[in-house]
Image: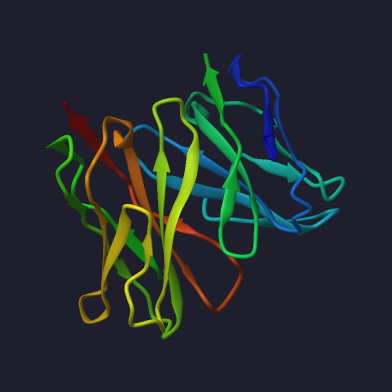
Length: 110
Length: 115
């Protein structure tokens, strides 16, 4: 049973539109993360959170917002989607030793 | 600033042989943690193995082992008796012990295991 669930699995958005990617974890972990993966690149950290109602910026936060309404849920928000934000997005929660990833959301901005 | 570099873009091996994937890192911390993850064709990312910088013994899990060379800032992943199912992209990652808990990833190595 998947402990980190992302929705949707894929999405097509229009330039300038608002996009919300959702993540739900049942690991009871405090820390949650949003990463972005581009072809030929590793994962780059966008935002993370260690407690509900609080988020922190990662390495590439520009153009993204994050929301952590509860321990279980962590959302990534693109207020004005741009072509350059086409990528695969991964959510993760942090266990004692490492991260546990969701299955990813493939976002295409047209 | 911390950095993780994987110079091998892709590797092909024959089934049942041993393969080594390279990874070098940069950090100013004296204490840090190194990880290897596997990303399957479906996109799933799975944790494989971890090495703590203060441990001299190389970590081993199943048919995965690490070659930790601290003076060279190098952490190689060794897969013995490779199987077709090992075909995937392998990522090296690092976390410094100071500051917030963040993983920095390398760009990955595509491994293809051929019959």
